[in-house]
Length: 91
Image (cartoon, rainbow, N blue to C red; front, top):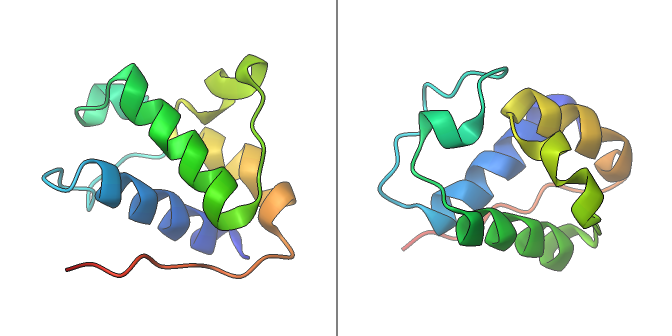
């Protein structure tokens, strides 16, 4: 997976969890929770989807690494480099 595909994967997961949010203008270096409505349960859902779709385990101590979209890419790209992008099917 390329870095752009990691961004797509994260946005796709967020779109499933917060379907009413506009993700088109997410900034890479601003905390996700400052840009869209995500609570702590939503964040845990993102982590669980990463595990379910990609087999990626994110330890609780690393959760802050995923605070921004850029942080997600930096943290997840090495873990997802050899994986394929799974896009959720939307209704």
